[in-house]
Image (cartoon, rainbow, N blue to C red; front, top):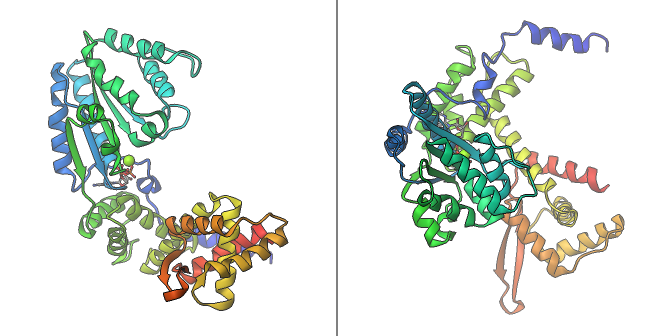
Length: 400
Ligand SMILES: Nc1ncnc2c1ncn2[C@@H]1O[C@H](COP(=O)(O)OP(=O)(O)OP(=O)(O)O)[C@@H](O)[C@H]1O
Ligand SMILES: [Mg+2]
């Protein structure tokens, strides 16, 4: 056995490195150019330009599916605006906030405290009455005598938690500010979000609206090729790899994040195998790995009862290899509960959990009519064999 690991280490050391700059494929990396978003960059820049002369730009609402470049485009435009205004001696401030960030901006209070801090006012992160914290922020903003461009990314999570009052207050405040103004850029990938808002908020936040369309496969290829140049040495990526990552991500509603993840994971797998090149087979494996991670992540987040139901479904399927109905699940489920010493839920509750597992895309269900025997729900599994096996192992560790 001695020396076996050494062999791997030596091979690893002698191999040409796969990555030139690993960071270039990470989510935190800001690309230098953003291909296929020229129209969006130009339009946003035109909307924000009046801020350079002390004006108040229209509020702007950006939406589009996940991975369509909303965050990277708005951050880039805001950074360039800040740079230009600094070099011209104008006073202008851009603040980017991701409303999903726990502790700093996921509630009304925390967000107002974070914003006050940006203007040099330290406020405790709990405890003050809400109107007082609003006042602290508005006064410090007004005293600062400048235009504030406030980007509220993933704005739907904030509203879900705190209601839309905060947006009403923020968009209305310009009436009260004497020396400063605030322009809000709201971003979401929840397409129904803007329609769920109070009409007053909707009209002021959406003074300008822009939809980010999904990327097609060719556009994703360009995006990947650009990144690949920074991330890899020449010749490391085999022909067809970028095209395959782009095609797979285009099928998943044109998500650039997914395309970049595929390329990164493919390269990591190649590196782990001490391969000299990233090949199409690595992309296949990467696709499986990402899917598996996603399924396991989702299953982990489910309550124990739901996991037992899924485990029962997989057990039944493994044995009988056919469509499963709720009755079948109940038989196995009751047995598993007994083994576990867990009190079983009613068939109705189990049906709800089955419907939820369908919603998360882990199983598929359909209701079929059996003539005079009424209607019944049948379950089928569409996960690949590899994923199914790993999922079973994962649940087995929990329940056996
Ligand atoms: N046109 C592009 N050129 C280069 N990289 C891009 C482009 N569009 C997106 N990306 C990259 O893809 C990833 C996802 O983009 P981004 O975070 O901007 O998406 P998003 O629309 O904000 O998605 P979400 O709704 O999930 O937040 C990022 O790593 C980003 O740098
Ligand atoms: Mg985003």
